[in-house]
Image (cartoon, rainbow, N blue to C red; front, side, top):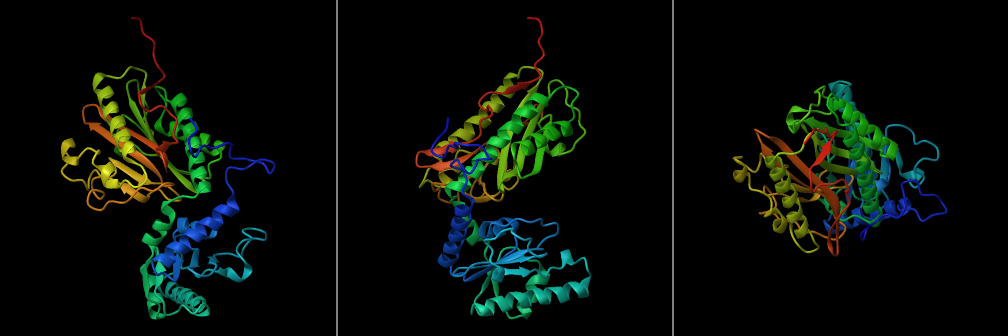
Length: 415
């Protein structure tokens, strides 16, 4: 079922094969896309503090154990400058030239105290201003994606005017390169393996957290970089479950599982499936599953280059039809959202935003499409597919069965 963007190899391609990800090319193309978006939007320089934006323009990844501990100064016409909280390890990230590497000035979420944090923030602003001056850009507005109030005050006192650059970065990241698409496809393949492992592990007497452990192990063994969360909830009520609940799975439960932000090369999954434990589904459960599945695929049929999110969003069930008073409450129950180095990217498709503020689908956009059915007497059905927009429509990456309800640990009884 390999489509236009099908993969040829696994995640450990060798030097004598044609690897499915060309990392140098991916870094170069991502930076070029960011710079093009900055030029288009009149942004000469941008201070990036969100990890996904830093990774997008520099190809670097280090732990962010406190917020804003590392940051990047990106330029529309120059190479980016990377600020790290330690000296650059020898041989690591050699594409960052020594003259473009700095020691960051950070205040560890203001934990050093008011005076020490303010003193550090002033040094932070002075360093940014100095680098802008060297490029002749100190009088230009500085784009910023995520900066706390202390940093904003320090930049203001240094005479630097700031603006929101997040829409510019989301615009740059919306259409993926071939290498990015392959990374997301590989993440979906890894998530397939985790869903299958959890399917085999689900049984009466097993705890939700045991299932999560199985899924996490499967993802890491498959080559995932990180596993932010696997939400497994027996009974179909995600709100009552968590990533580490001790709830015991029983015969008859509907187990809803979402593999959320498991990543390969930073590219995220979002991937729901439902599993029924030890029995056949009722007619009501079949109807709920069918309704969610059909809405997903009606939306998928609308996803093609040139169509808009408004075209697709009309197929989602209105909140009022579900007895919910506002679309604000159900905004992520009926949703398609862009996937990339973060969980929510352009484009977003739901009834809350898309009908009045449509976005246009373009070839190369990657996204997840999810739908929910809920009945307080029955439980919750949540399904989701991941894929990419192609010339021929939406190519689905996820392979775990979705059309029919999966039954775990079937119990055989006499006719």
